[in-house]
Length: 242
Ligand code: PXP
Image (cartoon, rainbow, N blue to C red; front, top):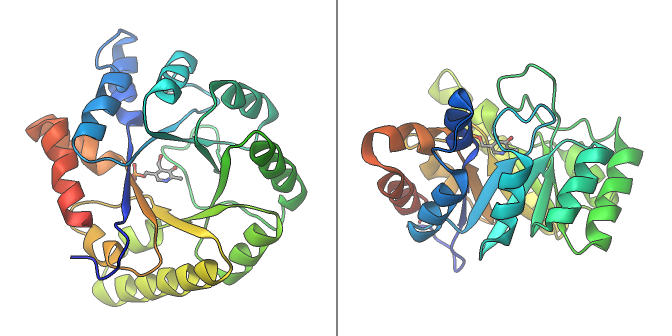
């Protein structure tokens, strides 16, 4: 059980429901229906990534997901055409992520220092439109400071070095890195999320971390849902996070 007065939010990423649908470019399985099941099973946020190559989530999905009751959190590259489109769909929150053509999944966090001006402009645009702005970053002090300086509301720490750690000492040191960065971001008044590569075996220590507001999890939940159903897979993760 989490030793905190606030319940940690579970963001369920439904991209891979759409990946399966796009394998046949048919109508099933529908990510919007999946979002509704995930919500009923305990997801606080529905997360999707509208990629430039539209390999899973399509524009029509985005608009439908943003019309559902409850928060829809959209991951996008810092790309004017994508930002224009996403602002028309009016999500509750947006997370800017790096996106490399051909990558299997998001590879690491943003280089905030190098892209400061562009990120600052996009974050300001999102906030003017009433959309909460998040940056996906590695859990490092320089990134946290830069994220705060450019006006982000939220930082999402890339948990992949933790989740892919090959042994216990490395996992422990990655957990400490996340803990330190979370504390620093929280002290600066940022809301803190974490995600990428989290699963039923590695989520518990993060779920107990003070000042962490939300965990965004996709692949492991959708993979498990093939065997137990989405409602059960989300419910099991909900219980691990609580
Ligand atoms: N957070 C971000 C920014 C991501 O890009 C992804 C992958 O789409 C996730 C969280 C979820 O990662 P996973 O699918 O490995 O749980």
